[in-house]
Image (cartoon, rainbow, N blue to C red; front, side, top):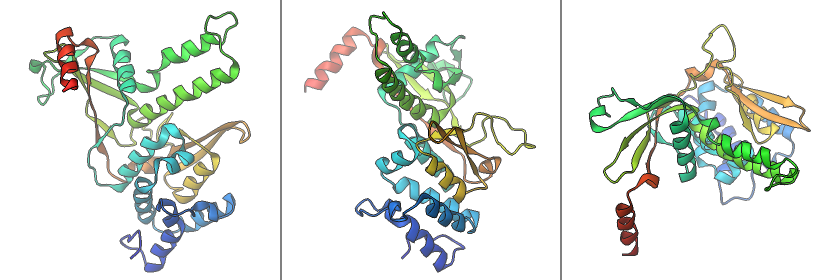
Length: 307
């Protein structure tokens, strides 16, 4: 029984896909794509597979990525892009089922602080499912790649001679990379988003991602252009990965090199054809911010934890 029994494929076509991708998703097997010795050879194979129907290739990607270990996927797309890649695969899979964001407490708290500091008031809800009568309000236009700006600025200032927390160039770059990982992890899931919130009886706030769609339709919608959205490119860990994706689904993505391969950035961008495959799905997420919790309720939580 093939790993990928794709409707419309011949047995030989399914076998080709299994032969190439099977070892990658089998975590107990030591062999993987490295057995195809050279980058050029791998890309040649993918170009040949690109002659298969687009729906077969899209189906294969939607099944491969969710089965890959995070470590394997991280080595290909970068540490900040793992969750985003899995969401892309979920979109291509076409089920349309809701998916939850994967934010740490730190991510949520930075997003909440950014929302509270952003110009404009929280607006009472008109959504009947989350009515203002129950305390729900929202704030739009939250650009999630800005939520760690304070940390960025602190690192930049610490590089100045005489700064009390002065760091070396190497230390500074390591801190930059760590912050970028957090930024990409959040931004590649929700991009620009809306938060809704309500105050609870114990003084805490409940926050939710409000009706966000993962749909590849954000950005420039000028259909006369091939590119389907200015700023739609995402950095990936290595140049080979972006070239491989372009070789496999050239109708949907385009690879970019910013600078040179010796000293540059690898990016992958979606073409407008991406909006016509897969199925959009709702992103959800819920977080209770206990930083405003009443003292007596904090004590109750502590005692509950001692039982």
